[in-house]
Amino acid sequence: MPDEIKPAETVPAETPVEVPANGPADDNPPGAEALGDPGKKALDAMKTNWHAERDKRKELEQRIADLEAAKSAPDPRADRRIIRAELKAAAAGKFADVSDLFQNVDLDQFEVNEDGEVDASKLTAAIEDVLARKPHLAASKRPKFEGKADGGAAGRESGPSQLTRADLKGKSPEWIAKAKSEGRLNTLLGIK
Image 1 (tube, rainbow, N blue to C red):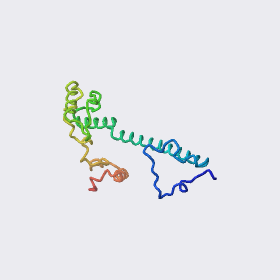
Image 2 (cartoon, one colour; image 1 turned 120 degrees about the vertical axis):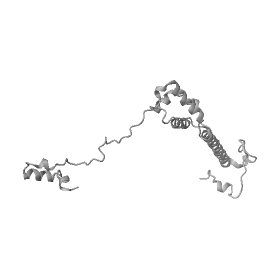
Image 3 (cartoon, one colour; image 1 turned 180 degrees about the vertical axis):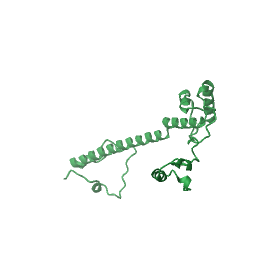
Image 4 (cartoon, rainbow, N blue to C red; image 1 turned 30 degrees about the vertical axis):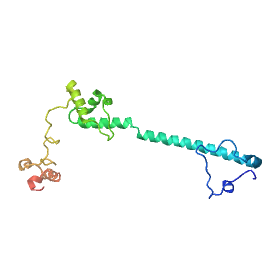
């Protein structure tokens, strides 16, 4: 195709091409009239390509700037999670149900600094304020149960109930054999 001009044919790779910072001028360079129709078409195609690439570059530069701005801006959801976690940790053991605290404290009064820290004195003051206004939300001061969950069964042997010699009096040999097979004579026979 005679109208196509490849960049390698028009400008050798080792020849630097200087383009002004604002791009090639929209008007034709000197001598463009001597190019003829195929040259003028090629020049117009190069200008169109240059403008398209310039617009793409500007769009990408804007996207990069937007992403960098978003990355440096604080994330309000992350800050809120940090504030909730710090408040929960500071209130540990002071409330029967910590969710009551969150219903009575405005989380917007706290700020997360650059290091991801929340002012501990403000947290403590907010907790004390809620407890002063609503003392019924405080954790119970009753002592905890100190027994075991088994209700005292630990230490007792489990298994079938054991029979004594008195229990065997008057029983048939078949009944005694059955009691032995069930393990009800283990204590009497010295079997563990």
